[in-house]
Amino acid sequence: MSGQPPAAAAGSLTIGGDLRVRRMGFGAMRLTGKGVWGEPPDPDVARAVLRRAVELGVNLIDTADSYGPEVSERLIGETFSPLPAGLVVATKAGFRRSGPGRWHADGRPARLKAACDGSLARLGVDRIDLYQLHTVDRRVPIEDSVGALAELKAAGKVRHVGLSNVGTDELARARAVTEIVSVQNRYNLGDRASRAVLDACERDGLAFIPWYPLGTGSLTRAGSRASRVGAAIGASGAQVALAWLLASSPVMLPIPGTGSIEHLEENVAAAELRLPAEAMAELT
Image 1 (cartoon, rainbow, N blue to C red):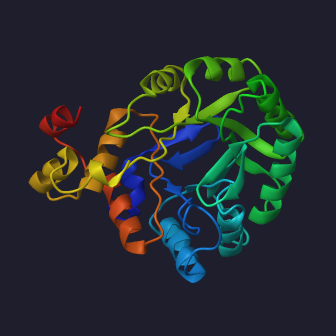
Image 2: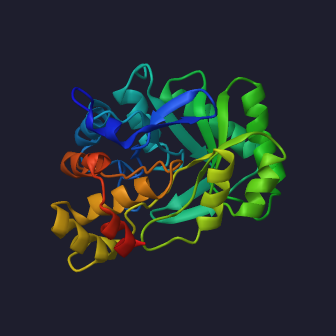
């Protein structure tokens, strides 16, 4: 791996047949204020984190119009103007915000189309490489919401369509409408409720992007399984949790997020960590 950036050690996967990305991404949700609301405490630090992620070899950054709202996308657009060649920015729509920590599903086709136009403008691009339905709105058939994303793709505003926060039935229904190339669900050492969705992604070659890959602090704090394994091999609990995800599936693409360069470097270093068989057995 000499001469390669740290993120390259995670290996790569191809999304949608033409987006080759490294399997260690970056989630830009935390580049906002408390409760994923408003501006970050120091926008210059947030921009520095984004730049450092790319320097470390990360070439997929995940965001959403609801992070801030609009703040995360705008920071990305301002930091990279234009986006570097080969950098994939994946974004999402499907939530409205009413305040810190407040999220409201909105999967109406007109809303999703308007959100896409806003994301294009903030990111400073003509086409979004990966546009994801952020959540299923129970008041709107998923076929209608995904149909709107398919129309955006046909119009050239979106390259590929992905989903987030779905079950296997919803995934199947969406795939009957248009090609789906990725699923972003909560998945980590302590929460494997989406295993069936991961299995479907493995079977059909879809990228699986686990959000909240480090879970709560309880997953990696002192005394946890991850921290015990890490102590034995000279790694942090967070690095063990990320390395476990990478080893769990070839379609896994973790997107740990942080507003700290120190934590970013620690997370990306997990790409180079290979867990011994006994460690995998203990964690599994």
